[in-house]
Image 1 (cartoon, rainbow, N blue to C red):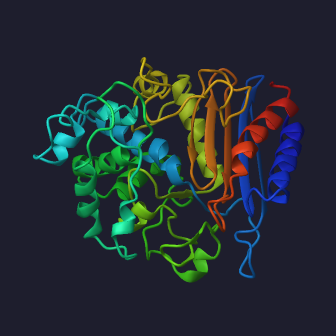
Image 2 (tube, rainbow, N blue to C red):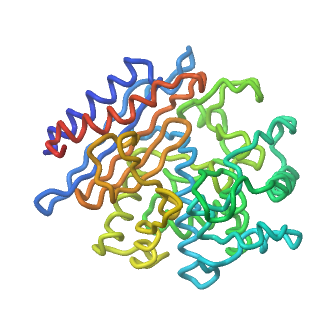
Image 3 (tube, rainbow, N blue to C red):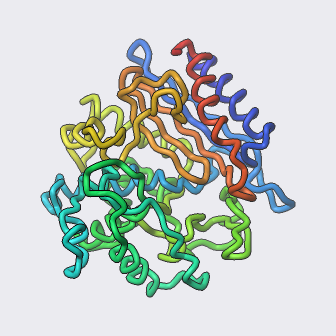
Amino acid sequence: MKKQLNTALKNACESGVADGVCSGVSAAVSVVGNKLRYRGMFACGSTRSDHLARQVDLTTLFDLASLTKPLCTTLCTLALINAGRLRWESTALRELSADTSPEKSAITIRDILHHASGLPAYQPYFQRFEPYATPENIPCLHRHILAETLVHPLGSKCLYSDLGFILLGRLLEQKARQPLELFFQQTVTGPLRLDRCLGFLPVGSIDQGEKEKIAATELCPWRHRVIQGEVHDEHCWLMGGVAGHAGLFGTAEAVLTLGECLLDCWLGKTHHPAFSHQLLRYALEWSDDSGQWALGFDRPTPGQSSSGRHFSPNSVGHLGFTGTSLWMDPERELVVVLLTNRVHPSRENLKIRSFRPFFHDYLLEKMGMA
């Protein structure tokens, strides 16, 4: 199994770089068979596509983009619910602003995690700002979001929304009484000893030498430079590099380790000190008639999932805009992490759309799990 796994990973990753999906890739897989856990990891390519390129290896950090939503914001929410500081029914926007309109005052934590709040998916607020990351941007962005009109009635359908998670990140800071990056580090990654390879990189927090070791993302037309060692998402960057919807950086092994912990907690085989097995299971198995989303995590879309054709319907995962993904299948006890910098040097490169399902299908087929 291990030899098949490593060979399949190597072939799949190298094909992604060779086909121009990305300049660099790092991937990791964990699967349980015959009561043994098999792990495989592989990295190849370069951090960027010009003369400043460095070789990608298993220590290379990637911008995880929206993997921040499940791995940080959702898990921090579970921790605060577990500690009794939040409830699923807590009215998120009302707690953030006394001026919340009646149509939005009933939006709960659960609604935001389920992407059923009715908030718009996205608005390019950053275009109203000069490209400077300052603390004053944060309340201004929050005001813009709080002023939005709902695009559909609360709870009537799922619409994937960055905006709800930006607000939720702020609420978590209020309830935790500390910055989101510190609460995440102390509560989620610290107990797993992952805090050095999975966390936020606030703007200006690392020097140029450290930046050059990180996978680069876009030649940003707004910031007028290749983004490397700082968050790609413009709104998160305006907020200093830490937000509820984006901002995490990590290695493939670190994301895999957290994924293994979540899967084992889900199956009742271990526990995380920040939240109970029952609480995590509630989030990962939540469903209603409004859409496919669990709480904070996505599920495979039949026939068109980025996880390919072979993950079970009970699987959960998430994508990141920069070219990242995490998928967990409880039936196979399988975790697959794919990290790329597909937006380097331009987000117009859409080859990731076909590569993601190919990658997962290829791995499972070569491992005899299809």
